[in-house]
Amino acid sequence: MVRPFERPTDRPRLTGSRADRRPRIEERRRLHGPDHTDDPLGDEAFTVLGRRLSARYVELHDRAVDEYERRCWEERVIDLRERRRSVASDDVETRNRYVREWTALLADLLLLDEE
Image (tube, rainbow, N blue to C red; front, side):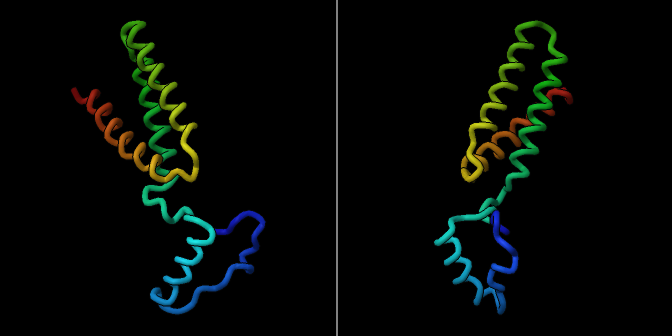
């Protein structure tokens, strides 16, 4: 990962086997903190699932039969957007928890069409 204002040539080249690189990787993590490779589910999964779930809520809002149901779906959209905005970019644990929750929730909502 190239950090801002860092030229790729400034980074040390890793050579040798993986066993040789492990101590250097551990040292880099100790000095600079975790990087994006420590995120098993990734930022992309968080973003994509958040957008899909939001789109599904909007779709259900548009198909609602009465005003109460419309308000319920609208509140869910707003709550989801607030959750997405409140998670810090370096909070991997919370992002992963939301990805797991949203995956299950999206699967349940997709089952509504099958019934």
